Image (tube, rainbow over all chains, first blue to last red; front, side, top):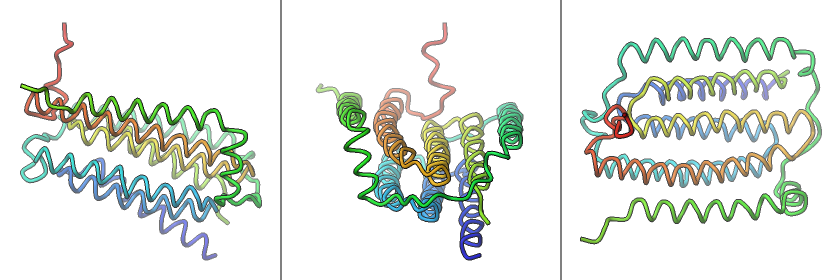
Length: 167
Length: 100
């Protein structure tokens, strides 16, 4: 009972804040709304017993990614007046709405057709640090190492791109 | 009881919200934010399947998704700064150098 209440509360809150993200006039409000969405998603991860992922999710997103976003928004100074962020024309809004409606209809159809497969009760797995770490460093060791290369590429790319050319 | 389909429906709606954001916004930063929203909607599906199928592999994949998202954000924001420095605006409509 409590689980259902918690699910509906966090699901509703995440949907509302997600809609704020895509509709906010001011980029600062969009970033802050996304922080709320991330907190709700972390709470849903805890409900799904993915404790380690929930903790990492909060650290990475609320702690690092969105702070970086906020830095850039403040740095470029487009938050105050919003002049550099014109709303899209009605054509784009209509196009977006139609596309999203088609996408939702398709996803809904898939979920409806496959509904019989989704009746299963939750399994007893718990995403503790030990269980996830064991899997990560045994079965998924090679992909884990490859992600370090990806991070290195990301760091070098960001530094090279954002560096000011010496005059 | 909250079943798998509850989480999948929520994930689908969040993903659709992200798609709408990408299609309807013209600010590069807001488009990047919408991409984050879509990646996290996919993460929610992964975790939900992981829970209801009893396979922790889904949570490992979420871990990888986060790494990819972090890389995407750093490089994307660097490109946004570069765009603002050269064009003085974050409007995607003005970044049309590739138009023939």
